[in-house]
Length: 119
Image 1 (cartoon, one colour):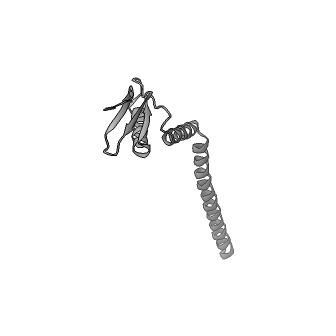
Image 2 (cartoon, one colour; image 1 turned 135 degrees about the vertical axis):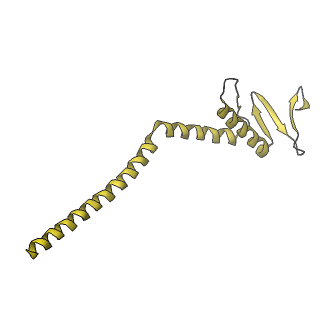
């Protein structure tokens, strides 16, 4: 009778260990599958494209930033932040087809017919 009881306890411990090991593997696979889904999702690819485009726009002050009247608030904020960052870094930025400059006194101006016009 004791042999059966010891055998039953060993089998029970073995079953619990197997369940715990498979449960750990499932958790790792869930994390891996979530990572893969995020990496391969269309939304993350679109975000990467926008961030690359923003980096390219930020690094060159001669690229025109066009803020339209139908742009939503988030896009307008992002574009204006890029414009302000380019002004502070390069002292000039092109916005809606006009090149805008900033002088050492932090005054913003643009050239009209060869003359400075402060904004």
